[in-house]
Image 1 (cartoon, rainbow, N blue to C red):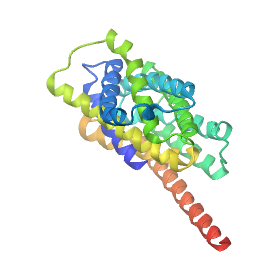
Image 2: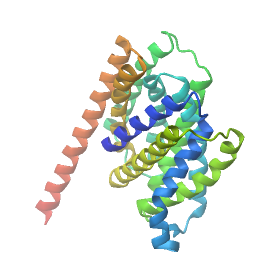
Image 3: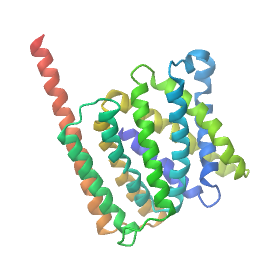
Image 4: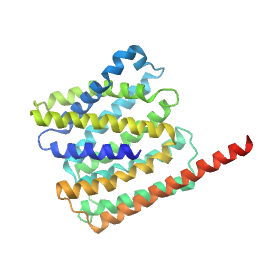
Length: 287
Protein backbone atom coordinates (compact mmCIF):
# COMPACT_ATOMS: atom_id res chain seq x y z
CA UNK A 1 0.00 0.00 0.00
CA UNK A 2 2.90 2.39 0.70
CA UNK A 3 4.49 1.52 -2.66
CA UNK A 4 1.12 2.25 -4.26
CA UNK A 5 1.07 5.68 -2.59
CA UNK A 6 4.55 6.52 -3.91
CA UNK A 7 3.67 5.43 -7.45
CA UNK A 8 0.39 7.32 -7.36
CA UNK A 9 2.13 10.53 -6.32
CA UNK A 10 4.61 10.23 -9.20
CA UNK A 11 1.76 9.59 -11.63
CA UNK A 12 -0.31 12.58 -10.48
CA UNK A 13 2.77 14.78 -10.76
CA UNK A 14 3.01 13.87 -14.45
CA UNK A 15 -0.74 14.39 -14.88
CA UNK A 16 -0.46 17.94 -13.60
CA UNK A 17 2.72 18.68 -15.55
CA UNK A 18 1.15 17.56 -18.84
CA UNK A 19 -2.29 18.99 -18.08
CA UNK A 20 -1.94 22.21 -20.06
CA UNK A 21 -1.50 20.34 -23.36
CA UNK A 22 -3.29 17.03 -22.89
CA UNK A 23 -6.91 16.89 -21.63
CA UNK A 24 -7.89 14.40 -18.96
CA UNK A 25 -9.65 12.02 -21.36
CA UNK A 26 -6.58 11.87 -23.62
CA UNK A 27 -4.22 11.30 -20.69
CA UNK A 28 -6.51 8.51 -19.52
CA UNK A 29 -6.25 6.83 -22.92
CA UNK A 30 -2.44 6.95 -22.90
CA UNK A 31 -2.36 5.67 -19.34
CA UNK A 32 -4.57 2.72 -20.27
CA UNK A 33 -2.64 2.06 -23.48
CA UNK A 34 0.70 1.88 -21.66
CA UNK A 35 -0.79 -0.42 -19.04
CA UNK A 36 -2.19 -2.75 -21.71
CA UNK A 37 1.16 -2.90 -23.53
CA UNK A 38 2.93 -3.82 -20.29
CA UNK A 39 0.51 -6.70 -19.72
CA UNK A 40 0.50 -7.83 -23.37
CA UNK A 41 3.33 -10.42 -22.95
CA UNK A 42 1.40 -12.02 -20.11
CA UNK A 43 -1.81 -12.01 -22.18
CA UNK A 44 -0.06 -13.64 -25.15
CA UNK A 45 1.57 -16.26 -22.93
CA UNK A 46 -1.55 -17.17 -20.97
CA UNK A 47 -4.10 -16.43 -23.72
CA UNK A 48 -7.55 -17.48 -22.53
CA UNK A 49 -6.37 -18.02 -18.96
CA UNK A 50 -5.49 -14.31 -18.68
CA UNK A 51 -9.21 -13.49 -19.09
CA UNK A 52 -10.61 -16.48 -17.22
CA UNK A 53 -13.59 -15.39 -15.13
CA UNK A 54 -17.00 -16.57 -14.07
CA UNK A 55 -18.30 -13.05 -13.36
CA UNK A 56 -17.64 -10.81 -16.38
CA UNK A 57 -20.48 -8.48 -15.43
CA UNK A 58 -18.73 -7.29 -12.26
CA UNK A 59 -15.49 -6.78 -14.18
CA UNK A 60 -17.22 -4.75 -16.90
CA UNK A 61 -19.02 -2.60 -14.33
CA UNK A 62 -15.79 -2.11 -12.38
CA UNK A 63 -13.87 -1.08 -15.51
CA UNK A 64 -16.57 1.37 -16.60
CA UNK A 65 -16.68 2.99 -13.16
CA UNK A 66 -12.87 3.02 -12.99
CA UNK A 67 -12.41 4.62 -16.42
CA UNK A 68 -14.95 7.38 -15.76
CA UNK A 69 -13.50 7.90 -12.29
CA UNK A 70 -10.00 8.16 -13.77
CA UNK A 71 -11.05 10.82 -16.29
CA UNK A 72 -12.73 12.88 -13.56
CA UNK A 73 -9.78 12.55 -11.18
CA UNK A 74 -7.26 13.48 -13.90
CA UNK A 75 -9.29 16.61 -14.60
CA UNK A 76 -9.27 17.53 -10.91
CA UNK A 77 -5.52 16.93 -10.56
CA UNK A 78 -4.92 19.20 -13.55
CA UNK A 79 -7.06 22.04 -12.23
CA UNK A 80 -6.45 21.91 -8.45
CA UNK A 81 -3.36 21.99 -6.22
CA UNK A 82 -2.10 18.44 -5.74
CA UNK A 83 -2.66 18.45 -1.98
CA UNK A 84 -6.25 19.68 -2.30
CA UNK A 85 -7.11 17.20 -5.05
CA UNK A 86 -5.68 14.33 -3.03
CA UNK A 87 -7.55 15.51 0.06
CA UNK A 88 -10.87 15.37 -1.78
CA UNK A 89 -10.03 11.98 -3.28
CA UNK A 90 -10.02 10.45 0.20
CA UNK A 91 -13.71 11.11 0.68
CA UNK A 92 -14.00 7.65 -0.89
CA UNK A 93 -13.13 6.26 2.56
CA UNK A 94 -16.55 7.37 3.79
CA UNK A 95 -18.04 5.06 1.16
CA UNK A 96 -15.47 2.29 1.44
CA UNK A 97 -16.04 1.52 5.12
CA UNK A 98 -19.83 0.97 4.88
CA UNK A 99 -19.44 -0.82 1.54
CA UNK A 100 -16.91 -3.18 3.12
CA UNK A 101 -19.41 -3.99 5.85
CA UNK A 102 -22.54 -4.26 3.70
CA UNK A 103 -21.19 -5.76 0.46
CA UNK A 104 -18.14 -7.70 1.68
CA UNK A 105 -19.55 -8.62 5.09
CA UNK A 106 -16.28 -7.66 6.76
CA UNK A 107 -16.19 -6.96 10.48
CA UNK A 108 -15.71 -3.20 10.83
CA UNK A 109 -15.04 -2.41 14.46
CA UNK A 110 -15.13 0.97 16.20
CA UNK A 111 -11.36 1.44 15.87
CA UNK A 112 -11.47 1.20 12.08
CA UNK A 113 -14.51 3.44 11.89
CA UNK A 114 -12.82 5.91 14.24
CA UNK A 115 -9.61 5.89 12.19
CA UNK A 116 -11.55 6.58 9.00
CA UNK A 117 -13.49 9.44 10.62
CA UNK A 118 -10.35 10.99 12.11
CA UNK A 119 -8.59 10.70 8.77
CA UNK A 120 -11.51 12.38 7.02
CA UNK A 121 -11.43 15.23 9.53
CA UNK A 122 -7.79 15.68 8.57
CA UNK A 123 -8.83 15.74 4.92
CA UNK A 124 -11.36 18.49 5.60
CA UNK A 125 -8.75 20.53 7.44
CA UNK A 126 -6.38 20.19 4.49
CA UNK A 127 -9.16 21.27 2.15
CA UNK A 128 -9.45 24.71 3.75
CA UNK A 129 -6.35 26.37 2.21
CA UNK A 130 -7.29 25.16 -1.25
CA UNK A 131 -10.67 26.82 -0.93
CA UNK A 132 -9.30 30.11 0.45
CA UNK A 133 -10.62 29.28 3.89
CA UNK A 134 -14.15 28.60 2.64
CA UNK A 135 -15.80 25.33 1.70
CA UNK A 136 -16.76 26.36 -1.84
CA UNK A 137 -17.30 23.64 -4.44
CA UNK A 138 -16.27 24.18 -8.07
CA UNK A 139 -16.29 21.85 -11.07
CA UNK A 140 -12.86 20.31 -10.32
CA UNK A 141 -13.88 19.59 -6.71
CA UNK A 142 -17.20 18.09 -7.85
CA UNK A 143 -15.33 15.95 -10.37
CA UNK A 144 -13.06 14.59 -7.64
CA UNK A 145 -15.99 13.90 -5.32
CA UNK A 146 -17.76 11.95 -8.07
CA UNK A 147 -14.52 10.14 -8.87
CA UNK A 148 -14.11 9.17 -5.22
CA UNK A 149 -17.52 7.51 -5.17
CA UNK A 150 -16.77 5.61 -8.39
CA UNK A 151 -13.40 4.44 -7.07
CA UNK A 152 -15.04 3.25 -3.85
CA UNK A 153 -17.25 1.04 -6.00
CA UNK A 154 -14.26 -0.30 -7.95
CA UNK A 155 -12.33 -1.06 -4.76
CA UNK A 156 -15.26 -2.94 -3.30
CA UNK A 157 -15.68 -4.86 -6.55
CA UNK A 158 -11.98 -5.66 -6.56
CA UNK A 159 -12.19 -7.09 -3.05
CA UNK A 160 -15.09 -9.32 -4.13
CA UNK A 161 -13.18 -10.58 -7.17
CA UNK A 162 -9.89 -11.28 -5.36
CA UNK A 163 -11.66 -14.02 -3.45
CA UNK A 164 -11.46 -16.26 -6.52
CA UNK A 165 -9.44 -14.26 -9.10
CA UNK A 166 -5.71 -13.57 -9.16
CA UNK A 167 -4.52 -9.94 -9.12
CA UNK A 168 -3.05 -10.41 -12.61
CA UNK A 169 -6.41 -11.43 -14.10
CA UNK A 170 -7.99 -8.31 -12.58
CA UNK A 171 -5.21 -6.16 -14.02
CA UNK A 172 -5.66 -7.70 -17.48
CA UNK A 173 -9.40 -7.09 -17.52
CA UNK A 174 -8.97 -3.57 -16.19
CA UNK A 175 -6.31 -2.71 -18.77
CA UNK A 176 -8.16 -4.22 -21.75
CA UNK A 177 -11.59 -2.82 -20.95
CA UNK A 178 -10.16 0.49 -19.76
CA UNK A 179 -8.36 0.92 -23.09
CA UNK A 180 -11.54 0.21 -25.07
CA UNK A 181 -13.63 2.54 -22.89
CA UNK A 182 -11.01 5.28 -23.12
CA UNK A 183 -11.05 5.43 -26.93
CA UNK A 184 -14.17 7.66 -27.37
CA UNK A 185 -12.86 10.39 -25.06
CA UNK A 186 -9.42 10.28 -26.70
CA UNK A 187 -10.95 10.54 -30.16
CA UNK A 188 -12.78 13.75 -29.23
CA UNK A 189 -9.65 15.42 -27.81
CA UNK A 190 -6.93 13.80 -29.93
CA UNK A 191 -3.50 15.35 -30.61
CA UNK A 192 -0.20 13.72 -31.46
CA UNK A 193 2.29 14.10 -28.61
CA UNK A 194 5.79 15.48 -28.91
CA UNK A 195 8.54 12.82 -28.46
CA UNK A 196 9.41 13.94 -24.91
CA UNK A 197 5.74 14.21 -23.95
CA UNK A 198 5.18 10.72 -25.33
CA UNK A 199 7.85 9.36 -23.00
CA UNK A 200 6.21 11.10 -20.05
CA UNK A 201 2.79 9.76 -21.03
CA UNK A 202 4.24 6.25 -21.27
CA UNK A 203 5.90 6.69 -17.87
CA UNK A 204 2.56 7.84 -16.47
CA UNK A 205 0.92 4.68 -17.80
CA UNK A 206 3.63 2.45 -16.39
CA UNK A 207 3.35 4.11 -12.98
CA UNK A 208 -0.40 3.75 -13.07
CA UNK A 209 -0.17 0.02 -13.76
CA UNK A 210 2.44 -0.56 -11.05
CA UNK A 211 0.39 1.50 -8.60
CA UNK A 212 -2.75 -0.48 -9.36
CA UNK A 213 -0.90 -3.78 -9.01
CA UNK A 214 0.48 -2.81 -5.60
CA UNK A 215 -2.94 -1.58 -4.47
CA UNK A 216 -4.69 -4.78 -5.57
CA UNK A 217 -2.09 -6.88 -3.77
CA UNK A 218 -2.46 -4.87 -0.58
CA UNK A 219 -6.25 -5.03 -0.69
CA UNK A 220 -6.19 -8.79 -1.37
CA UNK A 221 -4.04 -9.42 1.70
CA UNK A 222 -5.97 -7.28 4.20
CA UNK A 223 -9.55 -6.15 4.79
CA UNK A 224 -10.71 -3.28 2.62
CA UNK A 225 -11.67 -1.10 5.58
CA UNK A 226 -8.30 -1.73 7.25
CA UNK A 227 -6.16 -1.10 4.17
CA UNK A 228 -7.85 2.14 3.10
CA UNK A 229 -6.40 4.39 5.85
CA UNK A 230 -2.83 3.39 4.95
CA UNK A 231 -3.25 5.03 1.55
CA UNK A 232 -3.60 8.40 3.33
CA UNK A 233 0.18 8.66 3.42
CA UNK A 234 0.22 9.91 -0.16
CA UNK A 235 -1.25 13.17 1.12
CA UNK A 236 2.11 13.91 2.69
CA UNK A 237 3.91 13.03 -0.53
CA UNK A 238 1.75 15.37 -2.61
CA UNK A 239 2.29 18.27 -0.21
CA UNK A 240 6.04 17.84 -0.69
CA UNK A 241 5.76 17.56 -4.47
CA UNK A 242 3.39 20.52 -4.74
CA UNK A 243 5.81 22.67 -2.76
CA UNK A 244 9.00 21.66 -4.55
CA UNK A 245 7.79 21.38 -8.16
CA UNK A 246 4.70 23.58 -8.49
CA UNK A 247 5.37 26.21 -5.82
CA UNK A 248 2.14 25.27 -4.02
CA UNK A 249 2.97 26.45 -0.52
CA UNK A 250 0.99 24.55 2.13
CA UNK A 251 -0.67 26.55 4.87
CA UNK A 252 -0.77 25.75 8.57
CA UNK A 253 -4.14 24.05 7.98
CA UNK A 254 -2.61 21.81 5.33
CA UNK A 255 0.19 20.74 7.64
CA UNK A 256 -2.24 20.19 10.53
CA UNK A 257 -4.54 18.08 8.37
CA UNK A 258 -1.63 16.01 7.06
CA UNK A 259 -0.46 15.38 10.62
CA UNK A 260 -3.90 14.12 11.66
CA UNK A 261 -4.03 11.85 8.61
CA UNK A 262 -0.59 10.38 9.32
CA UNK A 263 -1.43 9.76 12.99
CA UNK A 264 -4.66 7.97 12.10
CA UNK A 265 -2.80 5.86 9.52
CA UNK A 266 -0.07 4.88 11.95
CA UNK A 267 -2.65 4.07 14.62
CA UNK A 268 -4.73 1.75 12.43
CA UNK A 269 -1.55 0.06 11.15
CA UNK A 270 -0.33 -0.51 14.72
CA UNK A 271 -3.71 -1.92 15.74
CA UNK A 272 -3.69 -4.31 12.79
CA UNK A 273 -0.20 -5.52 13.72
CA UNK A 274 -1.29 -6.11 17.31
CA UNK A 275 -4.39 -8.01 16.16
CA UNK A 276 -2.30 -10.17 13.81
CA UNK A 277 0.17 -11.00 16.58
CA UNK A 278 -2.66 -11.88 18.98
CA UNK A 279 -4.30 -14.14 16.39
CA UNK A 280 -0.99 -15.87 15.66
CA UNK A 281 -0.36 -16.42 19.37
CA UNK A 282 -3.87 -17.81 19.90
CA UNK A 283 -3.43 -20.17 16.95
CA UNK A 284 -0.10 -21.39 18.26
CA UNK A 285 -1.55 -21.97 21.72
CA UNK A 286 -4.45 -23.93 20.26
CA UNK A 287 -2.08 -26.08 18.22
